[in-house]
Length: 421
Ligand code: AMP
Ligand code: GLY
Image 1 (cartoon, protein in one colour):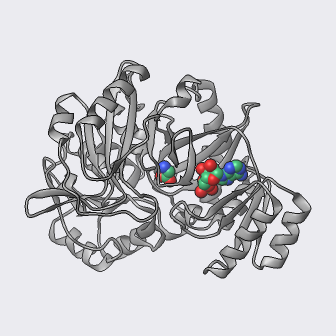
Image 2 (image 1 turned 30 degrees about the horizontal axis):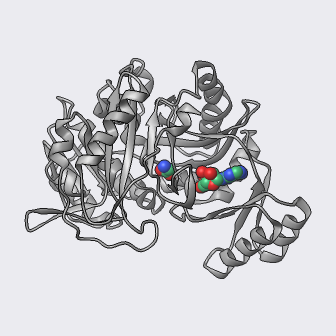
Image 3 (image 1 turned 60 degrees about the horizontal axis):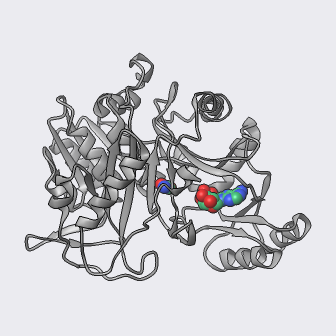
């Protein structure tokens, strides 16, 4: 089978890396891919824009692609799946434009959850700042303000005071938002449940946790994610069953009721409260990054078979997912300055030395320039290690991280610390 993967991050490198391990996969084309996918076995990069659906459809036809796997939310929310269905015969892993609203519109998602009785923070949607601010005054702080549309992790303000929440509302309406969601502040531990679905059956992958903040101890600015681990011990078998019953199944039914044939990943960002209640913070319409880089190294079931079964509506026919009984941890190496301004084009050394220690290095923001691997993004590399337990995995991952160098390299040294508190 020939597969086309859309995206250029660590998530897409991890997906391509897992896919090429399957005997049934003949070739993988990454659009546009990165320095890691450029040199991966069976894989080649194709430098097209991820929103140039016409060019992607043409590549699908010319290269006789059987399956397209869409990594990022942007092309999904713009309707890449609908476009490819209309113009080609290809199977697509990733929901349609309507289905992607579960991530691309927080107000649409909130309404779906409220109607379907899916547990989430109480909240309301506002289309003008005056009403939003009087709601905030009435509710009090802490309170959470969310931009309605895609905001690359920057659209949420967890406000500790009424003034902070009101300032966030003003800022959003001054930008291009015309709609905000305001919801109750929740306390607890966050987990990411990435579930695969073919629109009829839904199966969770191993639970994961990520570290969204830039600084040690989960402090400082929000980022795309600085590290992740799986399986998250917080989510035991009985909790995963509750998540399946209270969140995943009813969400899929609610999508079906809206005539949405959702095939891809349904990613539930959950808060587990101190009372062990489950609350949905958000849904994403795609694999998590960097959770995917921690989860996929533990997957034994061939990924191509799983993704194709989702895209063709045959997930129920597959046997239960098989996992290695190990712990997996992923540390993101970023460019100094990220998530603010950072420099690029810095020469990267030490990846081969790291891999000799048994870690896997996924590329997130890299490219080759005149044969030299250089940095090409804020998040540069994702070093992943698996071992029999988390202590060993963490030791191993940082040994790998320490082999790698480039000017202004930055990473958190405490990924996984919550496992031991
Ligand atoms: P979201 O994009 O909705 O997941 O929000 C981004 C981050 O903001 C989450 O990962 C949480 O850390 C935080 N957050 C979102 N909603 C809430 C909430 N209702 N209570 C507390 N923290 C929240
Ligand atoms: N790791 C968070 C996300 O993928 O949205």
